[in-house]
Image 1 (tube, rainbow, N blue to C red):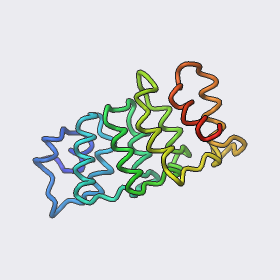
Image 2 (tube, rainbow, N blue to C red):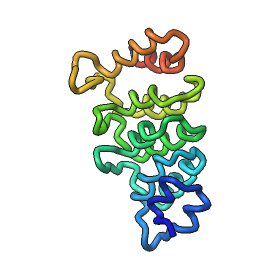
Image 3 (cartoon, rainbow, N blue to C red):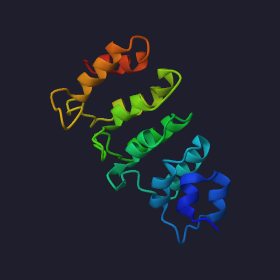
Length: 175
């Protein structure tokens, strides 16, 4: 039988339910694994289940927090990933967390693949809606000249029509 951690990361929701045991498995460990599941439905359902069971949305493991795992650990944005981002942010996940490669959640949000920037709207709503979001942080630790706000603005301006939703949120913040 596969370990619950392996199944959280690689299996379906149904497979996970078969092996997960609340007495012997830590909900936060399972959440951290599930956030990188390639199956968007399994990712959402397992992660939501673990949050319902008390997983810590503020968890940090090996240089990654829950937001950086979700936004940086998957090549494509899942249909309900925005709902997960909202739950994580509402639960206190650090929107200004710099993950092990130096990226902030907002940078990861525009790198993850989608067909249309409109699909990122729930993510922008959650991140920009956080009272502690700091757009003045350096976009890159190695080159602190540009802030994340200015870097995002350069991306919007350099890709006309591709990041229109992000443009709305940046304008609302004065960028």
